[in-house]
Length: 410
View 1 (cartoon, rainbow, N blue to C red):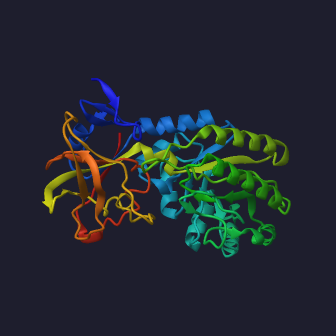
View 2 (spheres, rainbow, N blue to C red):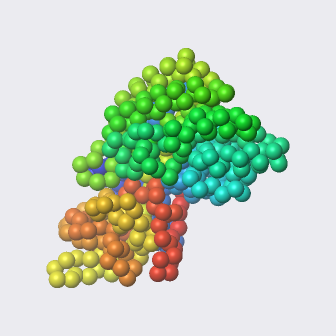
View 3 (tube, one colour):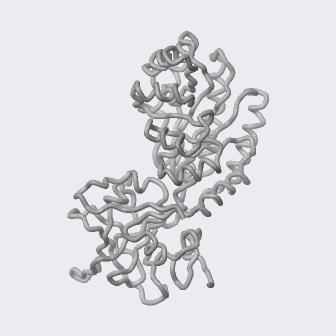
């Protein structure tokens, strides 16, 4: 069958007979296979391609870690574990999924500002690296290490004195709940040595969802320089230097995909410096959204079509309870529409301005606000692109006790 890109913004998926193709199947076929709507579908081929693109653009010495908080679906984590160099987790629950999926404990790191004592003990028992985010964690790790007779592997997560310019969410700089303020690092390093913890390095994560390569490069350079200064106070060589991620994907009109070329060149220069200035270290880049975001779609079916005072409303069987981010209620200050379309056989025909709303009794349940869409009828499928990250698990699935959704990796 002939294929063609959907449009310039969402050209990662092809069309077959006017229908979107995910994992080699049209959405009509996939919906029949799944047996219900709504559902999320993640494309293995796109995940594999994104990793390959990064491998080609970045120095081979840079390790790629998958931040599974972006999408912790067990099948997807298992697939990614076979493609990347390591996995970053943010809870003991995620740690279990990562280890069950076959991730190498030596290449698993555990971050998060509120790790419970039992979680820290689990991390020591599993042999994973703990990104320490407060002074409280250090004696807890030491006690677990002594009790279990195992080394507590630690890296210090640093809250730097700079921010990632242009990032959607700033994770470092200023007053933050994440990491240890940079001025506390000498004290923390002394405590690590005094308690006999196995120091391995530093974790610096300035921000996320950034589409400006120059900002990412600047943050990486500043993070490297900061790590160099801090390493002078360490009693052991730096083995692990996580420079964070922050790589964004386009969601809204006018946004362009991130240019990897300058980032690759910048990291190549840092790798060369590390060979002489931090010779024992491995540079790690931690990415979640950038790996998974564009590889996923959320699919929901139109159950009603209403016209209210001239405005068309397409009512679907899923909404913000399944995809909070697309509704605009997951960090947006001014609501913008995610890329949305109607998928059906044929694909051609008239268009109309319509709003796509979910089944919930709240005006916040809005997936598309007065968008130019193919004219749709009851039974047609609505597709929300850029849905592979922070979709399913970042949504209030119990809200109003609506039916659930299915996730598939195809």
